[in-house]
Image (cartoon, rainbow, N blue to C red):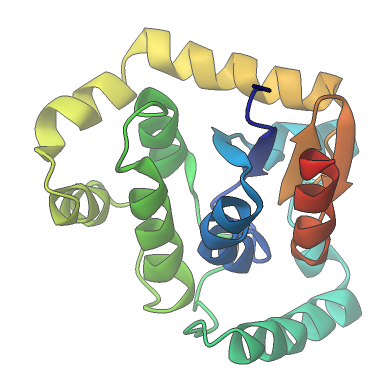
Length: 199
């Protein structure tokens, strides 16, 4: 009996295209018999190393205008609710720290999806402790101990190190999918990444 193939899903909460990827990945991977490992990371430090101090969608207005219209099309085609957030990019650091702290929890994927929906469907401030606490409670969790763990020095350093591993692996954007050392970038490469993992 062979081991189940593994697909690493590298996501960033400020990333627009990570939203539909997060909403789609589990049923597609399950159907293919592929295990998904959820890997939160931060694009800010990676962008800074490229000389950017903002999202490329803000730096290049034409690219940003295209992206927002494309997101409407992508989400409409997949029946995923979408509302352009009034602030972009929103600070996803707290949500990323929670996700890193709870990486092994069975409710993590549902929490991640709820954070994306809060930002990109309900226009909520996902940097707010109260918002993240409510989303954790929505998963049947007690927010206080999780938020305390997420903001511990050890967990903060762990997420920082994971972001460093992402950069070393050649990640430059999100969503990214890794099968071993094979890198796939973008929501539109999700099916290809799953097929590659399946072999």
